[in-house]
Length: 409
Image (tube, rainbow, N blue to C red; front, side, top):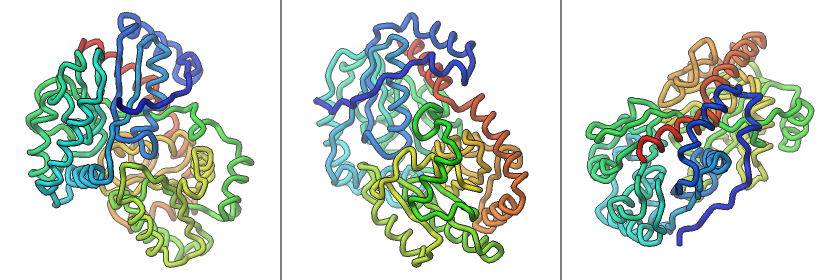
């Protein structure tokens, strides 16, 4: 059997004061005819990265409104995750395709997971390319299949997409963050559904200034000096090396500035440690650059503290499926600067709720402007928080899923 993920209980009613009664009532009306339906979410890992963060909230809320929902993690070894990481990068534009042997590994593990998936599901939601072949291999295991794509495949390696497309075309419904990610040849049932953050998790709940100060001091941050922070995986697409370069430009004008690069290491990302070490090397021993991950005891509360205390939060991605860290930073009312790519412009109105940048120089200039003018940062932060409240909190995401379940069933 595939590995089930153990989840805590969540109550939709707890979100009423944040998103409003109208949305909560709409969700309950949508859920009423779906009560008792059996749904399974399949993903490659239960920790590290946005997919798992979303499911830790989404699945309990689906249960709370009456659906019978499980989240299961597929089985894979290093050879599989090496292949799927290469696939992930190729779909985001890397010119290197998988070898024939690596494609064989991907298919073999999909066949194994298809055999292990239990029967009797009304809906099976498959997240990302790792288990994408399952409905081709075991269509009888679920009445309806949905593919959820969490990555930016707007400019894919054509050979990689050509190999994958026959598998994802089989899904009667698919979900993408933005229209521009939908590849040519998808057969109907395409839904544009941006993801969302949970405002009640330890990572996003209101944290007092004193608590944020206490946490950041534990990691060597001088809380009386300005701090730039990026929270993300250690991944070339997140461009932490570019963030370090931007910080160095800012430091020429503001020698007191500090940089925190905070990330998590995920089990389905074998390149993570290599790029973490590359980031350390690029920092070249600068004591004002703090490079931290979950193996330094950085968990949800610590991420919250860094985001809440930062003078500027950055997400200088060069490719980005959506970027949940953008909404996290905006929800905390912090001034935000992000790469003008992928799902980041969905969350940021340039010059209103934050800034969009395309170069190291632009990033540095915007960081410096905000550090020099705290009132500018406060204005951006206030408007960003309300934008997230209206568009990127989990109850809205739950509503969108319930609508799609109703359609496919």
